[in-house]
Length: 432
Image: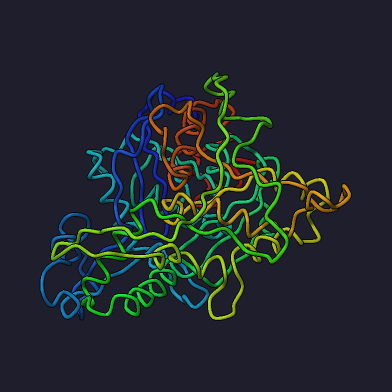
């Protein structure tokens, strides 16, 4: 029955912990998201029952700027997960995703838009719950779920690699081998982007003592949007080696779009001890080399904890990964999440992976890799030229959408007919 879906216009939604990127329809030339929405909503304190009183989107942004917002509303991030979470906010997830459909001008009561959801690598139970949400809450005619790590690698031209997803309070590391996400190798490091923000704001307070709390937050946000250079790792006499930022192996994305344009090599930046002027709403501020430390908790570890590079090495030490697979995975290193907007972060990360690679003076080995490659979005995606890899999962989802709802064998999606016959478990059984 999936062939019925091929003439319908699909919705592609990349659901991250803090943002949702979505579009309605996929063109021949892949486009950037039609909308990017904070993945949160607010409800009045003491009123948890009526969704009509909840606020989201532009209304929420306007309300958050008003005085005493925290006294009136409770801000909810339904897609954030934690090991301490007992009850997941499925009502909130449905509420936010329904708003996404409204912004895309798709009416749920007469919904004819199949949905491709790009989601973090999920348990079978979570996939079934999203299936129920899609068919019962969003009234979709068809559904396909694509794991975020796999979607990211597809957009970056690989089917095997290691994906670092930096979230708010933790970083997820996923291993993908031949288009299969290996959950037994999945690793979580307890440091995220919010830890970086808090650490960086503390540095700015010590360095610029005349700034107010609000000015510190404004300055921190402005510096994240600047092209700040993150310093390379320092390992005494050992210099970072064998780090590349492009790959020349099999490129699934290139095959799909039929491009053979040559790739350019890039070099990791060198940090200069300089000063930049940042204009705040109240005044102009001079900021020195302290700005280059904004990603330090991720690269050095938080309060003596594990760094993301150490977590990546730990994931690859899994006994279920063969030696050949381990070598292949280092050929595709991807960084996703909002931290990927800091362009030099990925290049700095590669130097922190250097101790796990053979140096130029060491003999060759079939056990330890000799090189690693940092992936980027290829230039032949014209509308994504120059884009950072935080958009890679959305682009990968757009690529898969082209075939997910046109496959007559039904291996890539389920329909409302499947759901009515088998319920939420159809997301597993009907694609096997």
